Length: 214
Image 1 (cartoon, rainbow, N blue to C red):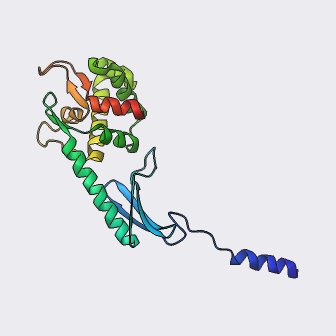
Image 2 (image 1 turned 45 degrees about the vertical axis):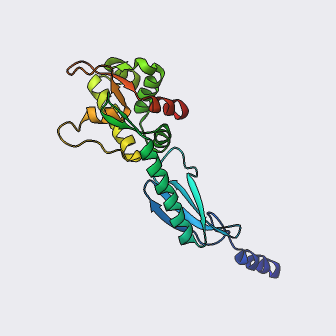
Image 3 (image 1 turned 90 degrees about the horizontal axis):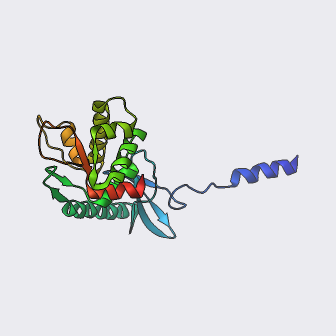
């Protein structure tokens, strides 16, 4: 019995290593689309950014060091803010969709972190395969497995809104802020004529991002 008592005391005295960056306490914060965790790692204060949203990929997005957890977090926030500014400046204007087009890097991150449905992913894949030929409404419907073209287009527009929200693209407001505006995040019509059936061509940046991630 004495041996059993010694074993019990020994078990109680063991310390479980703290989960996270290091053995000390972990400080958690949020910034934009990221969740930040800061702590000590090998004697240094490190802050790391991870996706905040429930996502397919939960990998490390960025990190920074500082003189304390708080300092490392502020340094990381500055880094993320600078990256966002540079990305915004790198966007191009697409006259055919009358919209600002996100960079390939932005689309890539958004596709990895945004919870698109299987149907939405299938429609984007089909568009990427079609390249500059694009897809007409009936092909979009078939790619998504829908029974109506309207339902397929609405679902595709919803994907555009989700990506725009993650990236931080400002969609125009007013009467035109509907499916057409959301679709402009993804691509542009093959013709500028109004009142004709949809024939959508994905932006090149998005096509390349889809190739890499979906």
